[in-house]
Length: 39
Image 1 (cartoon, rainbow, N blue to C red):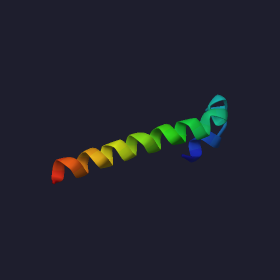
Image 2: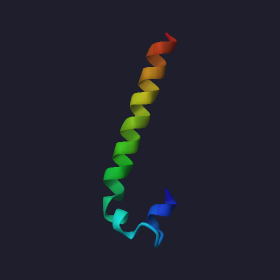
Image 3: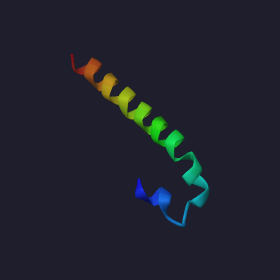
Image 4: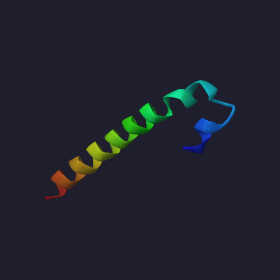
């Protein structure tokens, strides 16, 4: 997610950790859901 450090989204740089945690949470949820459905 290097684009967050560029000049295009300077306002998002302060929220980088929050966005990163949200994406990690979504990815974890998707992974858990796919593991449950495959069993």
